[in-house]
Image (cartoon, rainbow, N blue to C red; front, side):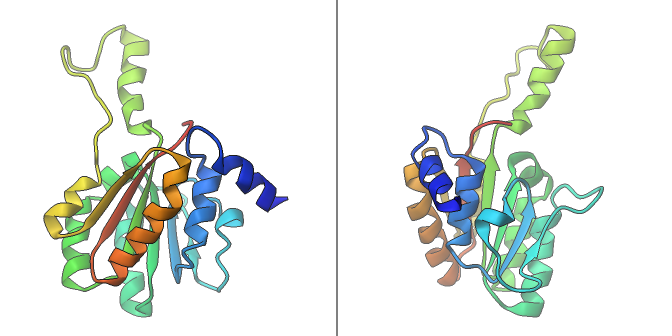
Length: 188
């Protein structure tokens, strides 16, 4: 049963991607642009053309631009879901500039599983040294740059924080701000 699974997931010590998907679905966005592990079974998009997912190739970062184009056509509220690496490769500052200048109502949710940090781990495993001696990759607040565009940013690390963070992001988005919620999720 889906509801029982969501209850179990919501009480875990780390944010499970399926639970985050459920909470995103509860926002009732007009459109979801998914470039990561958002599970549509949990998010429950209801209308035709309300859910767009991964392309077959050469796509990292596509959801940021797609949400701009989609909103210009539909005018509705959108949620973009993506991983931390795809977010960086999507050139978020260019996205913010367009979204603000065109008044696009979009909330970005970053599923941050530290996958972008996997580069360092892979190099260390193969060469027994860091990619650049003396340089250590670390988690950082990749979505916080939205504040330079008068946007809303929140870092979420625990399941109990997810519902309020997403509702606050939607509220800020509907008041004309670009919103970014970076959620530290379990697993890779």
